[in-house]
Image (cartoon, rainbow, N blue to C red; front, top):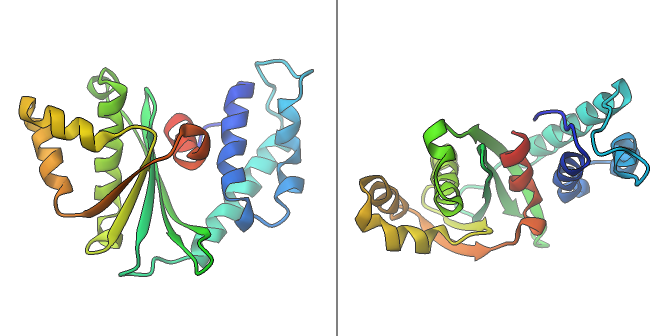
Length: 199
């Protein structure tokens, strides 16, 4: 994850960690130096200090430790949060505990190449799904997967696959999975959103 340089990037970063705050003990206290950067009197171009970096490193460490607590339970349904920005794709593999709380299993992001950056937002989102399915193939094969996205890449692939060999391959690749598509607006998909923008 890159260090944020603007207040908007700070908010995205905090949104990512806030999404998993249940698994970060003393989240508010650890994140406090970074949260201070969102105040009105702070300029838009922020000054990142040693205190901010220490808080950032601690949040990442806590979240990495949380993923060690939650190993994938094979055969149980999984969820994948996906998002694409103009420069990268990001995803997060989750499962749910008995109370329905999302448990983070793994995170991933990848930069887009120059050709991919020129694609439409929906095509980039479709690529994010393909990237995630390939990345987590060993965890999710033969189980039901819910894909959470702020676009509808399935509809896009169905409509556009006949026009493109690449999209036809993607559409065929999806057929080996038991997928449920679920719309989730960007404001509720902070984990994948942050990974696609700061990754």
